[in-house]
Length: 411
Image: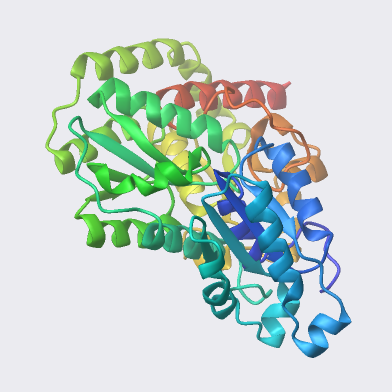
């Protein structure tokens, strides 16, 4: 691995880990070096997931590598099964077992009869040749394929959220806002928030939902799997801004054939527009007289960037600055992925305007950390009740952040 000024794209193993580590009533065993899970637990604590899935590492030494021994796996599985009320134990290889070809599915099949009350589920992708976003996609898909059980639809309409994972910045707050909107607009409650606030039992009940709401493109294969298994329709998208959130609600209403509560939508719209009206003249003035002060530059997950950009440019008429996504697989002509050298150059050119990116980018650039929209992070995030970026309340939060940054920059 070469030298980097910023953290490189995490591996597929990290994407799987961040997807699974928030699941309650489960344990995760990594067949690999002893220090991996210590660092993972430190990140998860800082990200706001202190206790959920129990994390273990087997440790691995030269004998295991040379002779292909699996005794450490047996002992760790046995320890986890006897010391945790886990309904599922996930097994994940690190890079060395992946390279030498350790067959975790075969090991799980061999060990499964010893633990009839606990399900052993193996994962692949332990190497560095695949990135975190593929890991999240594969983890969500395998969960959707293996854990939900046949069940009747709930009497009252319900929904699942797919793709709320610990790798996304502000994931708790955004999920909370979507739940609030669904309850207010449709009187619908969630069965499963997959995976940032869920348990094995929640995922077993996913087939009872009337619609699956996919918050990121990595979750679409899982939604397709659930549609095939249970006939559940899905809608993919993140609600941003006032118009964007209303359109998001209307799209869902067409799918589930339920009329939304217009009194809730109208009250939310009127409140947000009333509060934003006080800063619109400032945005209008700066956009015409000093457009460089309010040009909006964004760097994060592609779905997050597109959503925030739509609100800022389409609803508040802010000029678009330099925007990029954090994955080469998601890049396109209008939203490129930058190498580290390109990123340093592009960010260095953003002397004015509103820059929203990862915590480490903002810190390096000397910009406001209040404008963080993606990881890597440098701070503790233990409060799940901070303002969201999505939905009606997210529109208020973004407008406040932008006007304060623009006025600070103007000073």
